[in-house]
Length: 89
Image 1 (cartoon, rainbow, N blue to C red):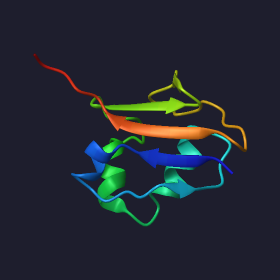
Image 2 (image 1 turned 120 degrees about the horizontal axis):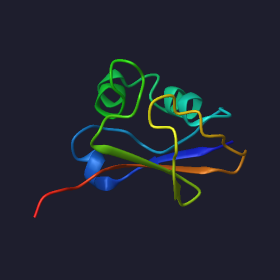
Image 3 (image 1 turned 90 degrees about the vertical axis):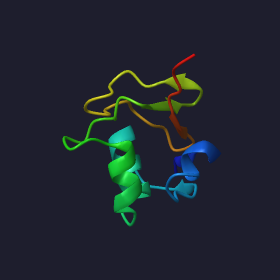
């Protein structure tokens, strides 16, 4: 099963522990990992289910390609890492 982890920086704002989940896509994995956590879900995803502008998701060390539909495929051993994008100077 894929594992979804969230950076400590993100966890400072909203509780979101790591989770082993079922799912063949990033959308399915995030939905499963955040199913019981509407606050975290709203922090990571926008109203249409896409990734919010200030969020980044990596699968097995590579950034995802589909930020709107989150259709990037996962393997059973995939590591999904969710982080907050930092900007500024």
